Image 1 (cartoon, rainbow, N blue to C red):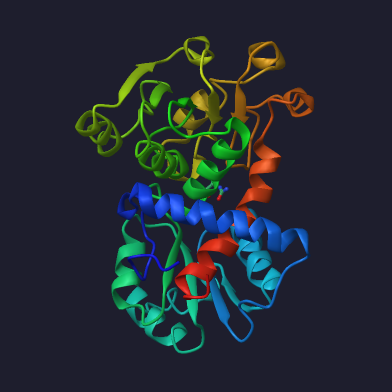
Image 2: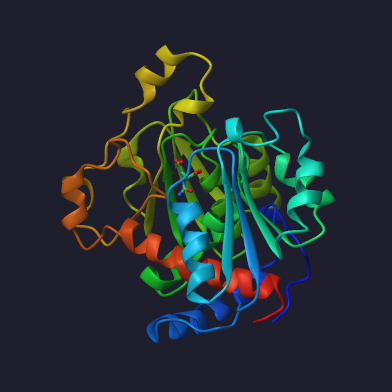
Amino acid sequence: MPLPFKHLTSTKQLSREDTDSILEVCEKMEKVRSKGGSNLLEGKILANLFYEPSTRTNLSFATAMHRLEGKVITAVGMQFSSMYKGETIEDTMNVVGQYADIIAMRHPEKGSADIAASACPVPFINAGDGPNQHPTQGLLDILTIKKERGKLDGIHLTAVGDLKFGRTIHSVSFLLGLYDNVKFTLVSPKELPMPEKVTSFFKEKGIEYNETENLEDGLNADVIYMTRVQEERFENKDDFERLKLKYILKPEHVKDRDITVMHPLPRIGEIDTRVDELPNAAYFREVNNGVTLRMALLAMLLDKA
Ligand code: NCD
């Protein structure tokens, strides 16, 4: 099932048809995983370039590749890379594109993914560009919502925390917004609101949303998506300290409700660990879905699905 693009830099480039076809390939990949994997990507090499901290995304891409018998080469940390010496993103892509069949890159600057894709001779995947987008997390979130709630149409999602700098909530909002009768409640401190690029998309599509500073206003939803306050994006550390634990989700918020708790992780205290024992807690299942999603996407972008 080919996708109508070579590179994935933003969830804004995906149609509902594209998203549904990725979800379909995810179903096939779940069967592959239940048998321990396959040799679908044998002979293919993924380059993982991570110029910002990552545990999950980096290892999840590598696991996906290994499960399909592909190979992985990795460069981690700006200070150990040629970019530190002043190499441009374009030159890095031209070089790495001759080693690898596909490239995933995380970079601290918004827009770096588009620059990379424009120069990349092989398929390119944005693994996070500063506060902008993280499309594979958005897609694995959509896979998680579909699996946990059995549908995407009609979902009411409450997003909580740092909606300004949290790139994953931007990515998932554009995707869920492709479905019918969805609704958003946006809970954030007034300093960290959902950016205009997302709210203007809601307005354009006639999607119902409301903004509030109060966590309790968001509990009457199908999904509550908690986010970490993104310390690395703050200019003023006192502001971060003041806001970092403004919202803490506790068992009493969700235990008697039919609401699914999601979080892209890592958490720094915004979900009380006692929530982990509740059936509502889907964040570790989300991690597992990340491997399935990346297997599907790698296979599709390499024309093997
Ligand atoms: C997220 C990210 O990097 O944006 N982490 C992840 O990839 N799962 C969320 C975060 O760092 O807060």
